[in-house]
Amino acid sequence: MTRKRLTRRDFMKDSAVVAAGAAVVAGAAQAGAAKADEDVKKTRSYNPEMEYRRLGKTGLWVSAVSLGGHWKRIDKVLDVPGRVNGWAPPKSSPVADAFHKNRYETLSRCIERGINLVDACSGPEIMAYAHALRGRREKMFLCFSWYEKEPRFPGWRTKAKLLQGLDEGLRDAKLEYADLWRISAHIRGSQHTKAEEEAIAEALAEARKAGKVRFTGISSHDRPWLRKMIETYPDAIQAVLTPYTANSKELPEDSLFDAVRKHDVGVLGIKPFASNSLFKGDGSPGSPHAAEDDRRARLALRYILCNPAITAPIPGLISNQQVENAVAAVKERRTLDSRETAELEAASRQMWANLPQGYQWLKEWEYV
Image (cartoon, rainbow, N blue to C red; front, side, top):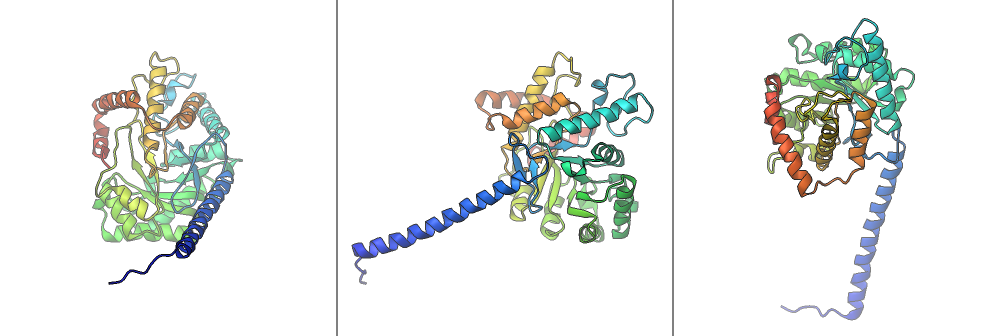
């Protein structure tokens, strides 16, 4: 077999073609990066000191730490007598006035610092945040799930009932639309029938077509089922909400994130602090553990953000100080050094030991 002799002229010609091709690729990459940077700057409540991540195929640019709807321990920061539980806001003054003032001010600080998404997953949360956003609705992306009228309950597992629940929720909260309707499916999603799964996907598609919601997704505590739904209904499942704690790790094989990446799905991580089990103190501003707990929170958020498949962890921030601490975590060096890693690993072991009985299931999310 003969080999064609490569002349200097041929070499130079081929090299020029390769260089030209590389220049085209590089130019396209630069143009793409410039376009993304331009889109980021147009996002809601943009702040150059905040990092923004693309929420999958929704195309929304979301703050790297966003706001979870829960307000657990909020009674620790309200300067009024009386207790506020983790779900329902108080109905009587002065506790109710202090509660709504706190939610308004905390949301305002989020907006100032570039946090631009809030997730509300129950009727009381939707009502509270819709109230706090009144007059400035376009400042934040609102994720909507009125879980009491969604498939976690048997009476809400048809397309018609799901759309009814959405309509009632939007009406009661005086909302014209939701940015993301993420249906709260059964915690063990695999318990849903095929007909129920189809009803979820069809309701999401119809709501988006009607302009009631801009984007759609689901939440569940069932990893294999979430993966199946992403793969079966890729058009309807544009984002998912899943647990991802300071002790979570990606499985090397058969990970949920394989489907997330393949189908360009946004991920909002709930329970980053494992329902506050990560902390030593009770959330009081004057707690002797406040400084250490702030550091643990920052370490956890930095660790979670090291997984690029996570769009944003969504802790339930209850004060301006907690907002500032979360923003500080985004600004800090992302990768933990060996000392910080050992510190977080020790805190995470303690976190697992501190889990309340009702949250033992979080241990199932050590590997995702």
